[in-house]
Image (cartoon, rainbow, N blue to C red):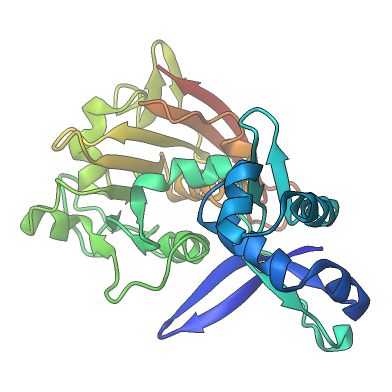
Length: 305
């Protein structure tokens, strides 16, 4: 039975996959000194059966029998294309009392979502800054950001992908300017009125914020100007092409929230076809399906070029 184990190490928790046994008779059948030698050897690298026999000093006839048992319980498998055996787990665990097992909510995130955020994750640490608009009057319109608190929801989601950083990665747009943090991986929260960094990179976006007919997002000749509409985009940082910018912004703060929900709660749906292209974007519309005044569903129109 496949499973995972958590190991506490200093201030971190290490998670790894394991094969779980809950029957002592099964353990006696599968595991002995020789099968453990086989698993240990294959955990270092995949080996053809001849090399495995030399590494373990187990006679060929006996080795084949052990491998059949380990394959039956999906602990090792033979890669028929490469003609090598490889181990399928990073650990072996024995459960004595299943009644003491605790149920935990799953934090599994799909592969496409992980790929979308991969530039921001390095050695399980957050690699960059989350930039929110200042709550003080600032910018050309003396705007006050009312979407800053949305970063909390995003942070809770990113906590599934990273360890807790020693220092908060959240910075104000005014701090990015005063501290010259442009040449970093940046996640921008909010549109160009409340977030001055969104304003500064607007011309590099695949769909741009415009004030031609009141604030809107413009794609060729099409305008998106409803309060609940926003954009989720990923581009190369124009100030340093080795870095990445992700934008979650809307015409109003409800549009920004819609983009954040698309990138978090509905990420599996949003990134279902994400392949790592630059620039990548999706227009997002948020909906209040149950009528309680809160966005609970999103519609996306994915594009890239």
